[in-house]
Amino acid sequence: MRFQLSAINTFLPLKIIPYLSVQVKHLLFIGLAVVVVSCRKDPGLITPVPPVLDSIDDGGTAVPYVPNLPDTLYDYENIVYPQHMLNDPILNITNNSNDGDNITNEGATLGRVLFYDKNLSANNTISCASCHHQNKAFSDGMKFSSGYLGELTGRNAMAISNVNYQRRFFWDARAATIEDQALMPIQNAVEMGMTLSNLELKLATLSYYPELFTAAFGTPEITASKIATALGMFMKSMRSFRSDYDLGVETNFADFTAEELAGKELFFSGDAKCNNCHISQNFGGTERHNNGLDAIYTDLGLAYVTDNEADIGRFKNPSLRNIELTAPYMHDGRFATLEEVLDFYSTDVNAHPNLDDRLTTTVTTGGPPIHFNFTAAQKASLIAFLKTLTDYPYITDPKYSNPFPD
Ligand code: HEC
Ligand code: HEC
Image 1: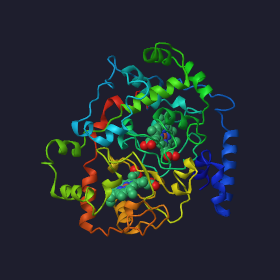
Image 2: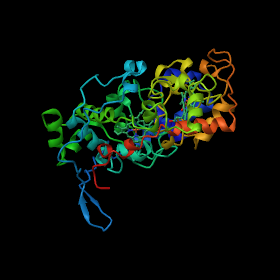
Image 3: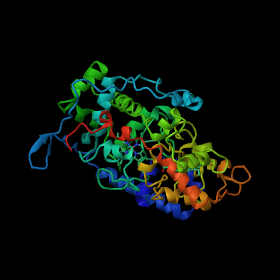
Image 4: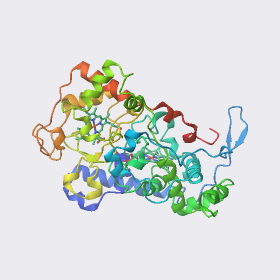
C-alpha cells in the first residue's frame, strides 16, 4: 500500500485531501515520506552512476553493452494499417500520428535503442522494456512491477500498441501526449530514478549515441526533448493489426469457430455492451470510465488529475488488443485471468456514484449496477473472441525487439 501511494502521490492535487478519510490521509503522509526518503537515497540525484559499458554472457565473458542494429534500418515510416482501421471514424478522430514530428526510420531506431537501454535508469539495472516485454505485448505479467531499487510501482504496467490512435496515457490519463509520457518513467522515483540533466550527461558518454542522434536529428547533441521525440516515434510505430480478428474482418470471419463467432456477436451486442466502452477497431484506449470495480476506491484514478469528485474511480479503458497476453488485469492487476474479469462483469459490478451509465440498469450515471449474469457458455465464447485479438506477428517482429546483448 505504501508503494502504491508513493508513486501516485506525486500527482495528487492537494485539494483532494479534504475528501479523504483520516486513515487514507495517514497513508498519504506515509507515502509522501517514502517519496522523500527514496529521493534522498537516490543515487541518480546525488552521485551519477557511470553507465554500463559491458555485460557478461553465459560463459562469463564480457560483451560490450552496445546495440546491434541492422545495416539497412527497419521500416517504421511506412507501416500501413488495414482498411478497417484506416476507415474507422473513431480512429480517424483520435489519430495523432501527424501531431509533432513525423516518424522517421532513424528517429524510431534511436527510440528503440533508448527503450531497451538500461542506462536510462539511475543504477543501470532496468530499461523501459524491463516492465514492457515484447512477448507480452509490452506488459510484464506482474501485478505491480519492480523499479530500479526493487520497490513496487503503484499500478499495473500497461500494454503498449497503437498509441498513435490514443489521446491520453497512463491509467489516470495524466500524460497528454506520448512524448510527455515518455519522460515520466525516467524521472519517477520508483521506476527509473533519473533526472533529465543527468540523463543527458550520461547518454553523452556512451559511444553509440552521437551517431544515432545525428542520424535522427542532424546533430549529435543529446537533449531530453529529442529523447522524448525518439521514444515517441518508436512507440507510435508499435502497431498491432495482424491478429486473427483482423484477418477475419478481411475474410468475413470465414475461419472463426462457432464459439468465436458467438463471442463476437455478444461482444458487440446490447447483452454485454463491451464495445460501448472498448470502442473502435482498436477496442478502447480512448476514454476514461468508472466500471464499478470498487464501492470505495483507494486509487482515485482520473480524479488525481482533474481534481473533480465526479472523476473518482474513472480509469483509462485499455485497448483489448492482445488482452490474452497482458494478465493480470485492471489498473491494480486484481484479476489473474480473463475468466475472473468476466465473472466481475457478470455479477460483481459495484454501485458507485460515478458508475458509468453504460453499466447501470437505468442508463444513468451512478444508477444501479447491471449484472449481465453470463452463462458459462457465454463467458467461454467472449473469452474465445478476445483471444482472436492476439497478434503474434506483433510480438515477434524484430523491429520491436531488444537490440542489446541480454
Ligand atoms: C518499473 C516499471 C516500468 C518502467 C521501467 C517503465 N514503465 Fe511504462 N508503465 C509502467 C506502469 C506501472 C504503467 C502504468 C502507470 C500508471 O498508470 O500510473 C506504465 C505505463 C506506460 C505507458 C502508458 C500506456 C497507456 O496505454 O496509457 C506507456 C506508453 C509506457 N509505460 C511507456 C514506457 C516507457 C517509454 C518507458 C521508459 C522510458 C517505461 N514505460 C518504463 C511500468 C514501467
Ligand atoms: C463502462 C465502460 C465499460 C464497459 C461497458 C466494459 N468495460 Fe471493460 N474496462 C473498462 C475500463 C474503464 C477498464 C479499466 C478499469 C480499471 O482498471 O480501473 C476496463 C478493463 C477491462 C479489461 C482489463 C484490461 C486490462 O488491460 O487490464 C478487460 C479484459 C475488459 N475490460 C473487458 C471487457 C468486456 C469483455 C466487457 C463486456 C462484458 C467490458 N469490458 C465492458 C470499461 C468498460
